[in-house]
Length: 191
Image 1 (cartoon, rainbow, N blue to C red):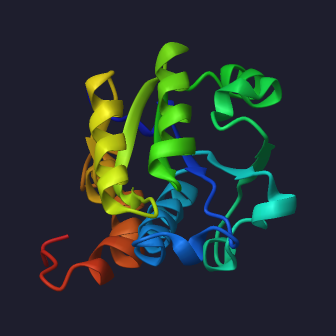
Image 2: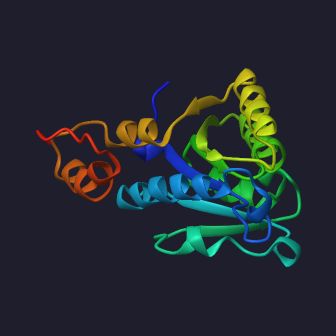
């Protein structure tokens, strides 16, 4: 069950300014999500963001929006993005069946969205280090529950390298220089 760049979408759920100050590991989650979003943008993987009731929780955190390439923002009132008809219709029309999910709070909106995606027949990949809650135990249990129901826990590196697929292309070399090499203090020099 490998990720494919042409079949994937990156779904970042509720990284909202009003919520993040109380999220354990929220800044680290945003940093990881933003890193993968940069690669997604380079590879033309659609980037979608959701905002839960932004009138009360604020919009997407500026730390994530700064430098974010092309993306779509979906506002929602349901905890699961899949319960919002415009979102579900647009996702179906996109024709991509692999959804990489991350965001806050893991045990509420991310989990319910992941379960909804699974129920609708999508392959769901839980971006572990970019998914957080107020309490780390709730984030851990949410990932465990999502995976017990068919999601697959992944890291940003796993996703990036699966999307890239091979190392002998101009795209890989560009992404390696801009994103992969700076991330690793022990970068492999033969690329």
